[in-house]
Length: 95
Image (tube, helix red, strand yellow):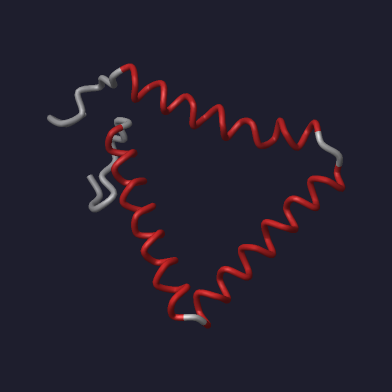
């Protein structure tokens, strides 16, 4: 541990961390309770949407600008949340 990370995390941040894990756990649980065809349909729709979004950001400058603005905001929020949740690894340099 270094000076910044004293090994403690407040209750709210720990609760958020646990909720993220529970949401991640819900994915295989949901797939267990739905039929194979429904799961394939959901995954197919998500795959097609991802491909269409990827093509749109390359072919349309407007969609690309919106995509990158959202991506940058998401990246900033991800880094902020990792730092708030007590991540001991610095994303900008190795320790």
